Image 1: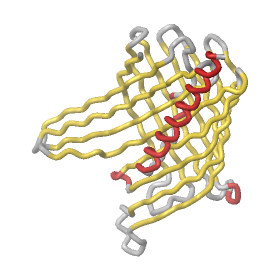
Image 2: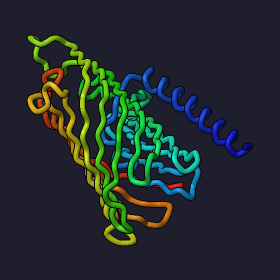
Image 3: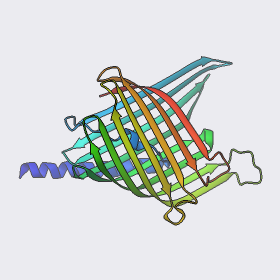
Image 4: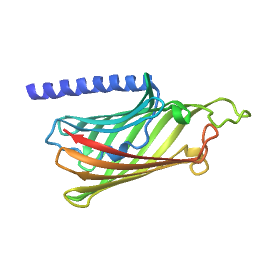
Length: 271
């Protein structure tokens, strides 16, 4: 009886904590697209686990330029069926005495394992990127994830979600005929597949493909995305990771390139 009461108390606290996280992320008003590449595998023997990644760039120009990109991924296990997952990415730039946050995103989800290979979870994602005109973006919804492959070397997920997103953009194209700001409020259906393969004890590769669209305009106004991560494990704690991301939006909110690509390298520290 006591153990049941304790579990119920932990679940209640986890639910309240998740609501708090969702309210914080919503107040920041943003969204992230490629969370699947970082949330595939969880070690059930660790109640708290995650990774911290960093990339640093320094060069001397008229002023000293210092760039820092950080990524953090935290999993909190609550029993065997409940997981709180938190992720955040920030890109800082200092130029002389001036400090700016160029880009960033946040992700929070509450995962509930219905069966060993099937889970559902509410989530919220956030992103801002001033360099490409994204002032703020927020999405929240419910996802379902099915795991058809789970072997020693391979792991695969199929995911679907229904979510609401709100976007505020600034037109950076220089086209004076277009309004300086663009707004989008939309309901989208999300479909994705993610696959992770351990090439050896040191090498690991993860790939994700994503399709998002309003059900009424499923192909004519779709958004496509892809991600590829290649990781080299220096040890059980430290690793090197190269990432490639692309987003292809068939109907951007403001005039801009339809194809966006992102390439980065990180030093990962696991705990």
